[in-house]
Length: 418
Ligand code: SAH
Image 1: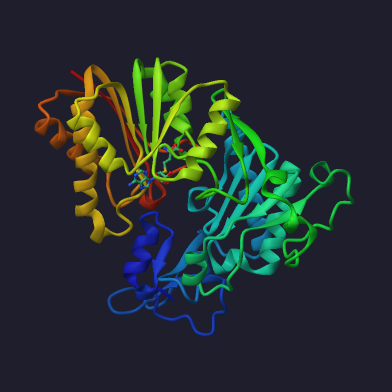
Image 2 (image 1 turned 45 degrees about the vertical axis):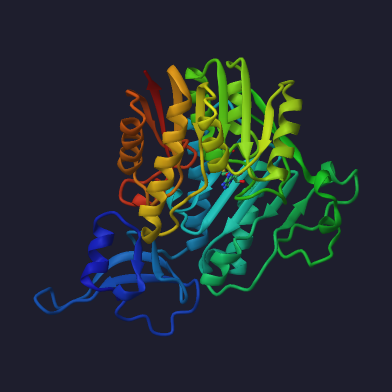
């Protein structure tokens, strides 16, 4: 039973109801499928109105995540259909890659589930009590294996989310590994609860790694290493767009494993990638070798390096800024905006006339207009005119749903300096 405010949120197209809007949920077990009703009375119809069915969490502030406007009698069938429809969407809208997000949680009407494909490796992540239930895991694993027949299936764990959902601690692990990757050893029985110490876990990371491609560029992927789920698939279309404008000398700041740098290398005379993480740059160099490119990698704090380089009067024709999320909550937004402005100001000072600035933000709390404002203010301070060539978001394999603003988080502006 939810309050009027909760019900209105659902009627406006959102799928979340916060705990403060739940009026009654007695003895609902963790992760259960519930029928959601709007409480009646007080100037409203005396009888409660059914809003649909949802996954319930006993722990999260987001108590309810709607899965259907109708009551659901077979949630496993519904989930299987949603996974299939997510896959059909990718077949229709994803090109030039064998690495993409297969399931994007609320963006695919499967709240609490993320799945990514990297060539023959599938990785998934469970973010809610409902998706963590053993029977649900079985359904998901069976459906993903049926659809992709992956050589390797791994589960990636977000420890913080599991804690928030009061789920038992877990580690990243291989759920399934088939004979193609075990040198002909017998296939292990499909199980998503492989006991610790099972053969699959003892393999070296390199035995699990694979190679994928996007936009004709090759990348190595180690399913149990790397941050997030390994590579930044959400930027795939922005890499190609940036390469469409880039030229001359290019600087890729917050380079990680070289996503932008490798794309820029195709069209630029010289590319430098900057990141504070040595392991990320080592992976980036391996990717560069794989593509026969020479890229200069610098391990540094981006803020220090940009200040030093701009003070020293260095110049570039293309600069990419793709920092980590500075604002994790609304409270951090003002500090985040100052950081965005600082980075963009330094970059603008170093761009030659006719140069290209590609500037990104993956903080949901910072909107596209906030980012534009930070960039504009940097352009005023640096006395540089700017023209907006493209105002972009995340790739289409991370679909955003109009009623759920949280599904759209990535901003990528491409600007021309004069
Ligand atoms: N552009 C990358 C993704 C960047 S993710 C891609 O397309 O793949 C953010 C990166 O910023 C991470 O690799 C992290 O190591 C790096 N980072 C975080 N803080 C930093 C800092 N202060 N200076 C330099 N790099 C930083």
